[in-house]
Image 1 (tube, one colour):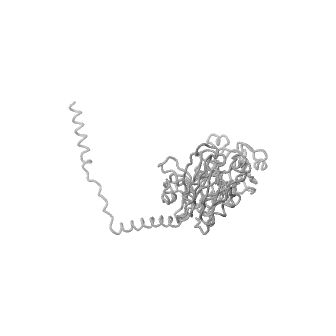
Image 2 (cartoon, helix red, strand yellow):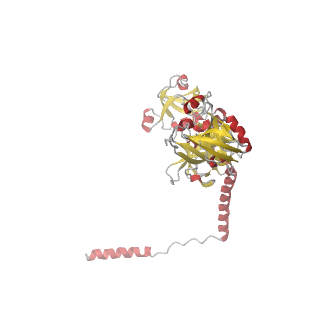
Image 3 (cartoon, one colour):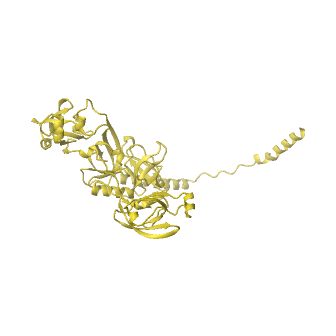
Length: 460
């Protein structure tokens, strides 16, 4: 026991000098010149963020949307004993063209009874839905205005992971909010939110209400359309790349709908086991699992078991890359492809067809009717079938289809589904008569709502 104690003491004495050794010298504090240089660099970065906000900010709008969870047709709602609950939501959008085209998310306007747009200058304007694309969660709306400040779109393919990005929008209804972060990743998919996923990922703060607003690069160009977050406060947000958004928006503006290129194949990624069985590298391409009868791939003689190595000269190392490259081409376009079959590489040409997709159902807001100038509401005449069903008149009376939040009509108590029985002393007016009467900026109206009627006055 005495010997063990002695050994322990010796061990302690052996380490004692090291413990008492001198601490490393602390670096000297930065000089005034160094502090000034650091502040100058920080000021440059700050000025860059300010420049982005000032450049893109006027092109960012706030959307105010009303929606009804129950039947959307006002004529059907007239039979109800009480009002269906109306949800009011908000989102963001970015001005695409000087004549009023605005890009936003489909989920922002999905189910909308009315859409209003608040511009940066404070104007609140009713908007019409031009078209929507649920597959990419994008939509285009339009306001009646000219000389609007349109944003400039970036080439999202050239974006670099790690570069600064700025998000602008209206999170939680807070207008014109600017946040900054970096581009965290590109080509994100497999999330399961939409049919077509090829997202930009960012840690710039994105929250409910930011949807539809722009994600910008440091030069003030729109890099993507902010779409969703994964877990509130997690710092992971996703945006539709500007190149995809541009193609979708251009087709909606031109045709009111989106037509996408299609190969006509089913496919899967090459797992390590599959790659080993095919004696290929796992990144060699995308494995064809089925070929649609009569589709482009069958006409080009593709077969299950083929591996698509490239499309249009771009490698397709997995399914997302294959989808991305196909979608950059137009329907009817012939593209070169490289195919691996039985370990050998072949070149072929394939003419893309239109992807079979179900028609996008119309929203209530797409039956907005005729706007009453400056009053903030739209009407349409009842259809003959609705006249017969409602049994309130033998004439097609004006039915209120949209009321802009905060407008003259809204303040007067009008709601979508109201039936106009009288205007300025004219009983059972038509929509044309109502529109004529509204030109003097004042209306005295008798309105039917379900089984009761009331008078109201609208003044500009």
